[in-house]
Image (cartoon, rainbow, N blue to C red; front, top):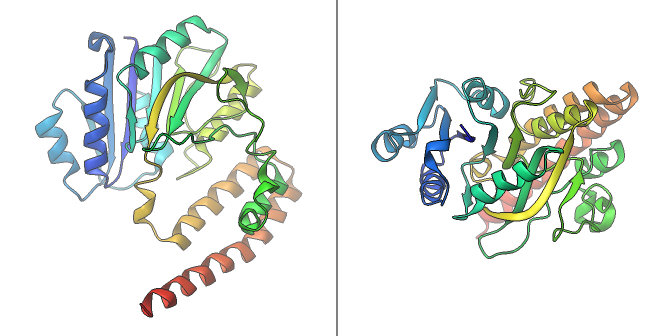
Length: 286
């Protein structure tokens, strides 16, 4: 088996349908492909749609929302592919995306993890390469400083990275995350993360083991960016983000950085709460 695709879904039935149609329209050898959809208790008809329209897809139906890491691990444990692709349900591959990415992985044995070029529906490039999080750039994000000083994150989101060339990187977006399954490091996501930071954590483990993470522009995928997240309120999303960030820093960084960010989040959540209230009041006047 060449490729195992794993999609974790939560109440994005239509986007998931578009995603799967695009996969089945690919010029890939389907005898070398298996697809898993792990559904986190969707209430929008996702399971019925999968049964009626995509009977060849292996469905794992959870009774609760287990989060991103735990749901992916359910399918990772059953995957047989030489490569495993974690693919968000709101992504749409091009006809040649899967073939070009697996061919590139075949030709670049140094890469244990790889991501491709991601674009929005209108073709705008998504700058998704990241350096590993540092305490000061994450503190800036918590306090919403990039809204006032956009260049403050130029090191964390490297503004000098050339998306026209393949290159070794710290981490890539988890929405299109291809992993060479048989390598020195076992492929499991840390289930302490419910949402966010799980792919960064895995990239860090890869680097620690002496393996490499790469970006390549050889293939392209459309990213509709966070369709599931749109169903979650701003403050709740911030709490998910906060919990994962703190777990990441507790695991990988000095303890003082963990506590500094924990204090910063007191103000960050207050800013999010006030911003949410202002938006509600603004909407109520219209």
